[in-house]
Length: 195
Image (cartoon, rainbow, N blue to C red):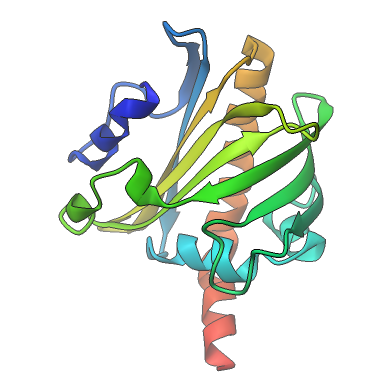
C-alpha cells in the first residue's frame, strides 16, 4: 500500500496484507499490523495519544520492556496532539531507536466524510524524523469499531528501511498495541470514573 492509497483502509473487510512487511516499488519499507482490542472503543485511541500519553512514565505503561524515554514539545496540551511532536527512545530490532514524531491532521490523508460509515473512531497520523531532523517515514494508526470492541490497523512507510527494520517495526507495534489492548479498558474506565 502506497501512502496515497490509505483510503483503502476505509473499505469494509480487510486488505490482502494486514500484518507483515515488504519492500514497495518506490523503495520504501512498508509495515502493516492488525491488533484486535476486545471491550474497547475506537475513539479511545485518540484519548490514549492525546491525553493519557504524557511522559516517560505513561510511555513505559504502554510497553514496559521496549519504551525508554518520552517527551512532548511545547505545542502539546492534554487532548490536543495534532501539530505537536514528541521525542522518544525505545528498543527496536535489538537497538535503541531515537526519533521524533510530528502529528498531522488525518484530513490531510483521508476522506474523513467516510469515517462514520467505516466505523472509524480515531486516526493518528504522524511523520517520523531522526534526531538530526532527517525525515524517516510515516505512520498511521486507524481504529475502527467491531462487534467485539475495536481494532487498530497500523501502517508504516519507512523511507530507507531494511528488512531488519521492517520486521522490528512490525514486532514492536504488535507488542505495544497488544499492551494497549490489555490495558485500555481498565485505564479508560478508571480515568473517567474519577472525573
